[in-house]
Each structure stands twice: as structure tokens, then as C-alpha cells.
Image (tube, rainbow, N blue to C red; front, side):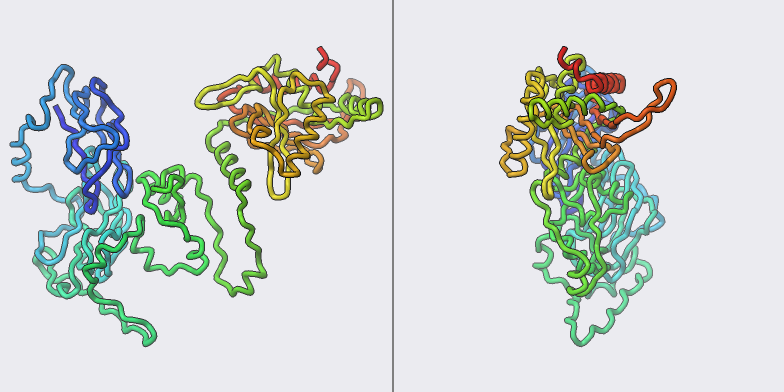
Amino acid sequence: MTEIKMPSAGQTTDEATIVSVNVKVGDTVKRGDVLVEAETDKAVLPVESFAAGDVLAVLVNEGDKVNAGSVLVVVGKKGEKYQGADAAPAAPALASAAAPAAPSPTSHTAAPTSIGTEIKMPSAGQTTDEATIASVNVKVGDTVKRGDVLVEAETDKAVLPVESFAAGVVFDVLVAEGDKVNAGSVLVVVGKAEDAAKYRRGGAAAAPAAPAAPAAPADSAPMPAVIEEQDEYLPIIKGSVSARAAVPASAAVSAVRQHSVYSAMPNAKMMARERGIDLADVVASNGQFIKRVDVENYVPIAVEPVATAAQVAAEYEVMAMTNIRKIIGRRMKESLSEIPCWQCTMVIKMDACMALRDTYKSKKGIKLSYNDIMAKAIAVASRRFPLVNARYESDEVRVYKHTNVGLAVALEGALVVPVVKDIDAKGLEQIALDYKSQIAKAREGKLAPADMGCGSITISNLGMYDVDQFIAIDNPPESCILAVGAIKIKPEWDGEKFVPIHAMTVTGSFDHRIIDGAYGAQFLQELKTLMEDPSLMLC
């Protein structure tokens, strides 16, 4: 029987809140399974099982406050009875306390010292025995505050920041990048400035004295040698790294970092290190801490070289991001990151559609657009291929009974998609009138929420700009979007000779969760058949 306890979350963190309990009594778990997730003021920590077996007891609930050492879950053999924490024997703990600590793998070791405060490697987790020093952010002689990140250590699970829990001057740095360390290894020693000369590493020779500070220029204030006691308890900027202070930021960079600096999840830190991203530039989407998805979605902000105000004004203008641009950006990013989209292109002969358009104009005085004709063809094709009327919502595919087709409309600095509903129940004349009305409302800024966001498929037509072919990004939660190019005269072999035809490319972008390759290709083939012979839409 094994008690899974809350590990130490860091030397400056005393308490954590249970945010999720992933197991229940009776579940079978393996070594390394995440049983509970606990949130500190720094990060969300996964608590793993270091034993395999059945869950005998779960002693916490979501929202509970726990300290390091609190029993969270008990794992044992099936049929064993857990009698509570009070029944657990205490002797092994005494024995382990008397046993000498295992030496650190690093070559840098230190004996306890009465001068200065030793900053040690905290426990990285119950299944992790060793860590590698990824970065050392301080040197001997540096002044640090409580909460400053001195060292970052990388385990097989995450990158852990090691913070100072004392204010003062760095007496000694006992590790270097690449060193292997265990929990409890001394990393840095911090103390009062006046005690620096008295410090001895392990009681041996004196550590190299902190370099004397260069004489301050006459126009600058001297740096205080001793941090005042109250400075220890000034608000700590979460995620701050003292090493960053050594590199002065340009005025432009400072202007970019006007948002709060957030703490980060370990996997977010690891990804940021891999991609060379400064977490100080990343905004937490939840307003609390940076997650892996925030790093994935981070777009670097180009920083111009420092220039005079006149030079900057001459080089560019600042265009404020409107709400609609922000919404467009968010939805397109959502589409690219969450929808497994695939594309397929079909060439459609448009001679028959052009003749139909001319007939409506000459005999009925109605100006049909090719979008009107395509919308009707989509509705007829959906009788055979109903998944084009589907939307992926709330983790389910919802197939609607009617065909609602959106049309992408470009506005000044924006893009909207008004929808005409029940296309399947309308004739071409009514479809044309409805789209004309929706486009007018869009350009006048009078579209209501009910006019948008209710489609199952969207038409995006750039043919009027002489675009031959393009790929459109799916408009979630719709099943597909059709990218329509310009009508061009192209040669076609009729068996004996090449003859000129009017051809148009249509590229479909399909949500693979709803529409597979063969299904999407067959739908486009049906659409091609109907538009090349519009009389079939009457059937």
C-alpha cells in the first residue's frame, strides 16, 4: 500500500489548490499516471503515481487546499483496506531522516554553512530523481530579491524555475549549465552583503570575492549594498527572471511589453525554450498563467530599431486592431489549429450558367450572380450528400434538414459572412433577391446576429479580382467552404480538336471530422454536373 502525497511545489510556495482529480476508488493505475492536478500561485502541477495498482482511497476533492506532504491518493493491491493516514507507520520516516542524503550527481557540492542561505533543488516530482541545469541566471555578487528565479532545471517532465526565498547578495553559485543535480542539492548561496567576506564553501577556502562594483557615474545614484527588509515583501512580478534585467531592453521592446508578465506551465516553458520565445512577450489566454497553446499561437511582434520620433512617423502608421479584425483573427486561428482540413479542386464549364444568366436578364430583368446559381446547385447536391449541411458543434456532428449557404463579403477593413437560409426551398429569383438584401445590409453595417453564424457551407468568390484559384480557410463550425476563381477561356479537346470553353475552378476545403476524401470529391462532382447543366436542378 502506497500513499501518494503532495510534492513540494517550490521553496516559496506553501499551499496548493486541487484543480482536478483524475481517478476514483477502484481505478487501476500505472506508475507515472497523473492522479491529481494541483495549482499553486506559480503553475499547475501534475501529481503522478509512483506505484502501480488499484486506487484504494481518494482523500481530496476539487477546490481543496493542501500542503506539501498531504496524502492525496492511496494505491495498493486489489482487496487491501486503507485505514487512514493515522494508521500509516511512522518508523520508516524516522529511519530515512537518520540516513545520510544521497550525494548530488554534480561535481559541485557544499556542506551546510551558518553564513548565508542555501538555495536547494526542490523536489521535481515523485517519479523524477534527477534534473539537468538548463540555465543559471545569476553570478557571484549579484543582488537578488525574494522570488527571483536563480536557476532553471530541466527534468524528463518539465522545466522548473528555482526561486530565491531570501533577499541579499549571491555568495556562491555551485552549478553550471549542463550539470546533473538531485533534489536537495545546493545550487546557490545567498546572504547579507556584509557577510560576503566571511563565507567559505564547505568551510574550506574562501569563495572568490564578489567583484567590486565600478564607481558610479556622477549623474547616477549608487546601488544600495543591502536590500531593506521591506523589499523582500514587495509584489513579485510573476515569471520575472533576473537575468533579463542584465540586458537593457530598447524603448520599442518596452513599448511592446505593456501587458502583465505571467507565470507559465512547465510544458509551455519547454516549448518556449525550443522555439526561442521570450515568455515575457506571451499573453496568457486565461489571464492567469501561460499554457502550451499560448506559446503555439504566439506570433512575434516585429520590433523596429530605435529611431527618432520623426523617423518612426515617416516609416509607418499604426493601425488599431478593430474588434471585427480580432474576431476574424481568432476564428481563423481556431480553424487552422483545431480543424483537420483537406482540399480538393474541380474545374467547371460555365457556358450553360452564362447562358442561364443571360436568359434571366433578358426575359425577366433579373440579374443573377454565379454565386446565386452555385448556392442553388449546392442545395440540390446536398440531397445526395447531406453532410454539406452539417456543423461540428459541442463534440457532435449536427446534420441540418435545410441548406443555409453563407457568402463571404469584403468590407472596408473587414470580412463578414451573411447567410441565406433554406436555399433548398427557394427558386433562383428569390435566392438572388435574398443575397442582394443581405449584401446591402452588410455594407450598411445592419447585419443582425441572426443573419450570420448559422450556415453549414460558405462560398468565397475572388473571381472578380481575376484570381484563377485559391484555398479558403474553413469557417467553423461549418463542414466546408468553396473557394471560387475567375471564369477564363480555356481549350478543351473534343476528340478531334481543341475548342474554347469558359472554365472556372472551385476548391473545396472540408472538415475531415465530417467529410472524407471520396465523399467530398463526389459532392464536387455532383456540383459540377448541376452547374454544367442547370436544367438538372429542376428535377
